[in-house]
Image 1 (cartoon, helix red, strand yellow):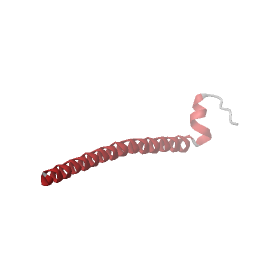
Image 2 (spheres, one colour; image 1 turned 180 degrees about the horizontal axis):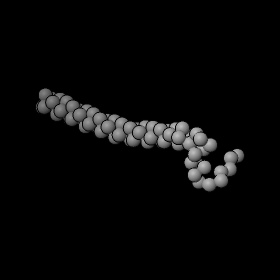
Image 3 (cartoon, rainbow, N blue to C red; image 1 turned 90 degrees about the vertical axis):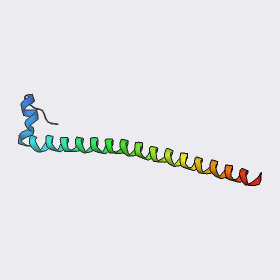
Image 4 (cartoon, one colour; image 1 turned 180 degrees about the vertical axis):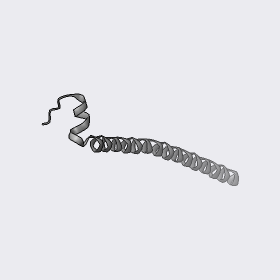
Length: 72
């Protein structure tokens, strides 16, 4: 376990601070982008599913109307 004398030495990480904090930043940014992409993809997919369901319902209603019109 490492102990640092002050906050500045903690940020410096023994001379490797740039690499350590840059890797944390890139990882956090990547996870944020992945999370946002999954949210927007889910919304888009749900919109497409609802649109397809409405389309199928319209087709079914038109088919039933056509069948009823032919049999009368």
